[in-house]
Image (cartoon, rainbow, N blue to C red; front, side, top):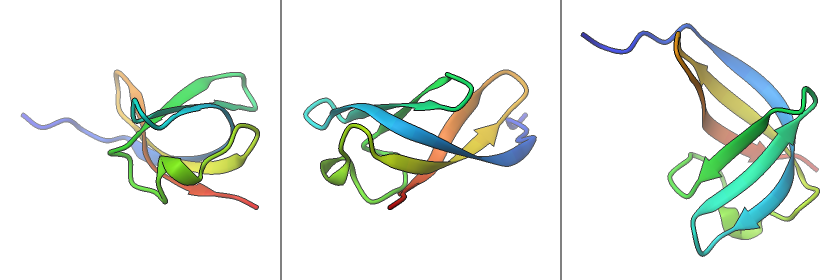
Length: 75
């Protein structure tokens, strides 16, 4: 039995912390939810991210959880 995806959601979030050596970045959206990006998340790469930078996140929503599928940096 596969995992059923409900829908894609787009969220704008601000980068709070970037840890490229660990392959992680943490972002916070307007609803004060924290999102994590890993080195495996589709996007331009953690090396170019800076704290305070805005990103658009594409989320995969599932019945039991939501995760970041892709991100892009906003100017």
